[in-house]
Length: 430
Image 1: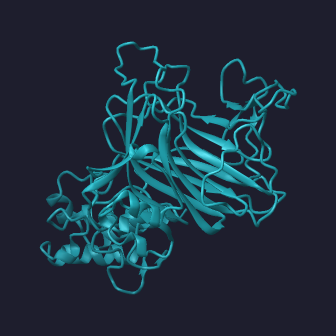
Image 2: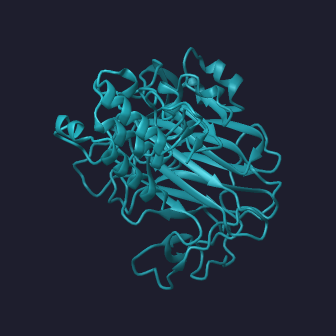
């Protein structure tokens, strides 16, 4: 409703102020704003990082829990900031001269897996008492000939976590000890090209066993492995280019509630979110089937009961590149090149925060939404901007979209930012 009110108010303001001249000058009026920050995709979702171009200073934001940019570092330095590193024979972790587009640094961390010598490596960070909701944003770049991945980046909880990662494969959490989800890569029955298609891989107290159709163990060992949450249409992870990835867990609000969530974004686009009622399908042998022959009893997803005590909170990040058993895997498309001996991935711009972070921004978010300086952003500011445009098209205060001139596009850009909540220069939007 607020969108319609604001849009209607702008139309009324334009009519009242006689903007026929402005419309004549702006002969290619666009229905959307001219972005001050070029998005990674047309529907990019900007977040906290937009306030900090290149992530410069983002670590000082009150919502940021941890930040790592791998600049001016050695492997020994990493051990001072991370609780545990895996660097077998000093051959896994190294620094390379490379940086994501929009970054302000010059280096990234490279993890290298070598067949016969190691299965990759990791960095592991614990997070004090923990959080009820946490976002982990990082950039990754797989080598152009990288193979599939066994496990990737994990966010989770463990009661009194040690300074090293624990593997829980084969067992189910009891609600008081741990829970976890990983942004992982699946082969999609080898239809996906390496390094794979994005999916979520989760352990929680109500997960299913892979051993039987009813989801219960049948007596064989290791009855529980992570339950798989794939997208309805596979989303391929590219090789040879930087990708902005973000993973989120939201805990259930009370021990008896199934209102917990998980979600992930790629290049600022929400790819999948699992919360109460967001998907309809069948959890069958540890895989939530959204279609196909195993989707035998489709029901709305209930949501996650991650924990049975509110004392259990999200308190670790496991940045890993785990390659056990993947060096020899090949996709069905035999023309795809894979290095079966050496696998590499780069990481950079790791941010953990209590709010959505989003991709790197290359410019600050414009001159600000509070045009009239009253501490609010609303249609009054749009009218004030229109007045500035009419009084002096060369007034830099009126060039809201930063294109070098003041036209009706600036008023439209401001209105859209107010509607979409993209105003970072003041606290109130109304």
